[in-house]
Image 1: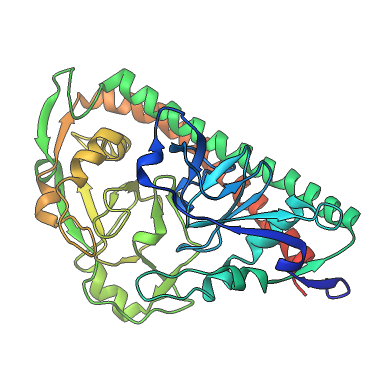
Image 2: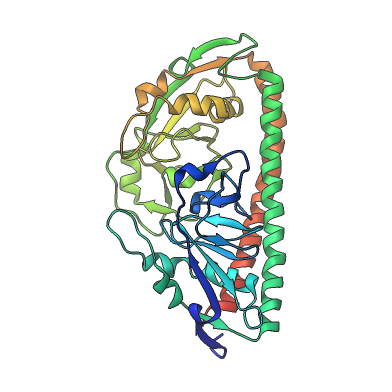
Length: 382
């Protein structure tokens, strides 16, 4: 990439910094232009409209690149129509004869961290027009830009399709759950209600003393960041020594099929089944639920805790100002509807097969993401 010319962004783009209009001009009824305020209005592919504005001050045109200039800095999108932009955004309009818009879109995605590091401000970080203008980008010939953008588009579209497939599988599980059991909060089917403490043989959490983290080792150190609704995420995994592990595991001993439940932080309330057959250690941000397998199935319990209405209801009980959390005592008092175990097992037979499909899709997503990242590195790294 170093053989190509490097230019300032301000020399090849018209940069319009956003400015928020009078709040009285916001509306939800479609009067005026779509109004995007900042990063929160960005969807997966295109911006998503939350408000309209009938007295816009700063306007972006269709196909302008929209970039977040306030924390989190650097998120990019492309305007699908003429719109009003608030002070959390800037609009970039390329000089079409020398710079392809989609090519710049991908360059800026790679420049995200660089821009974030240039943010200033005490209350929240932000970048200004000068910082944007001085950003250095590679400028190959226009035809090469278009070929690069087309290649990355193809991989990005495949990645989006795979993520949509995963979303549809999750929706299928949700649909089967409601058909068999109904809403777990409303409990229209009048199942017996029990608290988690009565459904589990043990409820505890990981260590409250952060041990030394190792880059390699025999014993994984699982924290909230390693768990999501689709399973384990080991992209940021550390390990602990055998001595430390034995101390932690003597009190908190996760086994295959137990429920791991996030109790601290922004993802508090997410449950997942332990699919690891090996021993590992956990931080206190994760609770261990050793359910009584004779009366409640792990698939049913996981999906009950992750049900949207149940999740919302549980999170209302959280404490903490800076860091949201559930105490073990509050977890023990969570009310769970308990259908007959035979019905739960039927549900588990169905959902476990869908989970296998989800695992295959997640693997495909990881492979496609690796391919996308390799292309980005090949095209844009010096």
